[in-house]
Amino acid sequence: GAGVSQSPRYKVAKRGQDVALRCDPISGHVSLFWYQQALGQGPEFLTYFQNEAQLDKSGLPSDRFFAERPEGSVSTLKIQRTQQEDSAVYLCASSPGTGGSGVGNQPQHFGDGTRLSIL
Amino acid sequence: RKEVEQDPGPFNVPEGATVAFNCTYSNSASQSFFWYRQDCRKEPKLLMSVYSSGNEDGRFTAQLNRASQYISLLIRDSKLSDSATYLCVVNIGWDTGRRALTFGSGTRLQVQP
Image 1: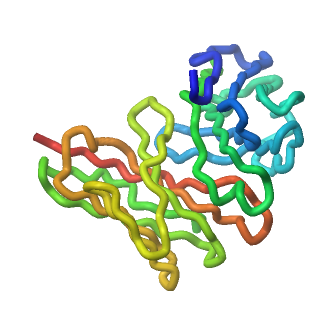
Image 2 (image 1 turned 135 degrees about the vertical axis):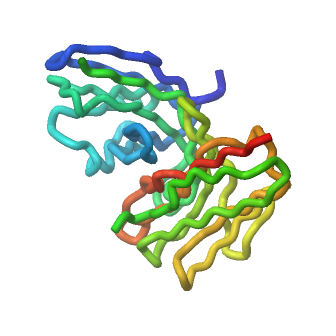
């Protein structure tokens, strides 16, 4: 399809397990963002990639969270030793952004998200 | 204080009504502003960008007031299908090199028949 694709749509894991969430951005989009959305809140920034470079990871809540985009297209967000407070919807967004002044001025296109529940 | 603040609502309005939402933001250097719409258990979708001179898209009008650091969204002739959460979005950290967008918590609108 033409949009941002995320998988899985739903993930249930036991506390302490590791999980991996996948994002396939719109083809050709340089910029990729991960957000975390808790119930009743707006999305909160986790990390940003320009191509394969992770330029901003200031929103990652702990060192248990790790993201990569090795070939500049598909990205994976990994959460190690999951905790109950990690339960949320994880949204991926992409924008054409060629870096510099373009990126922050462009709207972002979101995937359906992965709803993560930690038991 | 949150960087982007919105009244959470809910705003309950009858069909055909006009409703307006405001949003305030913390950084006067912010450059880009958007309204997104989010339906229950769905992803946010861009509704419209907000331009300095204000802009209109059908029944929707967006305004920016830089001096007071707020943006607004006006919906005329509300439809049942307008029921959703409206997210105010700003590139707050623009002047510090941050490229991510900052979202408000959203304003919930319920249009009733």
